[in-house]
Image (tube, rainbow, N blue to C red; front, side):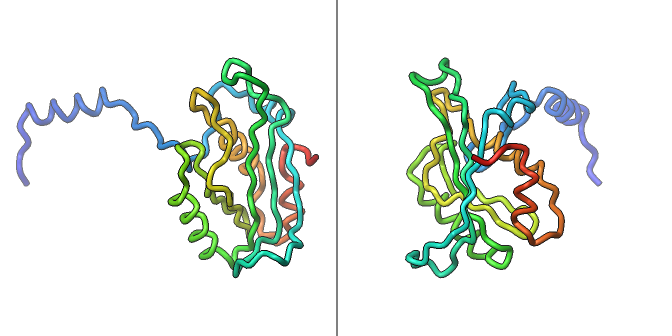
Length: 180
């Protein structure tokens, strides 16, 4: 084993002691907005759930339902010129469709012409279900670049106990926000 010189060791220790954390990439990463009180989130958001019944869709794999999260209180006026209510939609698939969901999500993300954090194609697996955002662009970022959707929605998803139940309704009952 090679011996390290004292200067090399000091350089490594200095780099470790003073290194700055690497910022997480924006876009597909869910983050809680800084300074958001979690107990206020339930009052600021609602969701709309709809079982899919449209048979005119020509895709090979169809979602079983959709869920749309929307903010009920406007984003603070300091970040926007007028009242603005961010929203984000997910299509819900069964775990049997996981390969399709991965390809579908990746194709949306790669083909989006939007800038982060407005890029769509988000994918979240909860229990036996996969939630995929089918929109190429999502209206979640304010003028200052803050993503007003993903942090809150991930917080809601994390409140769901990932039980082995295959009942979607039981999973949705665990959301800490009300349906509209």
